[in-house]
Amino acid sequence: MKEKKHYIIGDVHGEYKTLLALVEKLPKDAKLIFVGDLIDRGLQSREVVALVREKGYQVVKGNHENTVSKCAEPFIEFLEHKSKLSTLNPRCIKESSRMATYLSYGLVTLDRDGKYRFVHDNIEGMKQLREDALWMRDLPIYIELDAKHPSGKKVVVSHSHISHLWHLRHDKSIEKEFAYEVMWNRETEVNKEANIFNVYGHTPQKHGVKITKEYAIVDTGCCFAHISGYGKLSAYCVESGEVVESVKVM
Image (tube, rainbow, N blue to C red; front, side, top):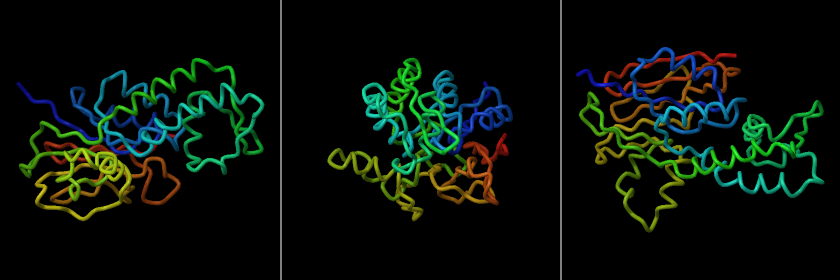
């Protein structure tokens, strides 16, 4: 029986149409795994999350999922109980790209003056955001794949580089610190003693997926099409090393 191939997809960031275009290019029976950051920046975060959840694709938690899972409840509380506050200046939000996610759930509208206005009566949108945020909260920090890589090494999928921290993965005393680093760090120094092949995203790569003997960085800046060298969503095949790309669909 022919074994299904594993394709690891880079940071989608709400680019739903581009994701559909990429999936269309992949084998129908492929096992898809995402490196996190499904949401924010692009305008269709809700649709991306819905597709991934419906299909049961594997996903590791990115820094954007981590932040939304923490801030969704306070945001909903704000919508439900601070009814006198009808506008929100994006400058007041640490990560203004997150407003694109709230837009996709129909919880805010953007006025011509550049200010966000709350939609107070979208109970369905609030409930869906709450449900999706709880799902994001429980995503794993990394996934060890049962797949054959040409190097013979174990394949580990994470949001950012993990090999330099691999020896700490079972240390419960630093569990929170470990998770934070795996979601946020920009480290690229390889710990060869980890003996893993790490596939991750987080840091956009110009001109395509970066592949070395120890890792592959699959974030190719899908949401940054306005910047030269970016604007593609990429998938890396674990078994063959093949890279499949889709240019951002407008």
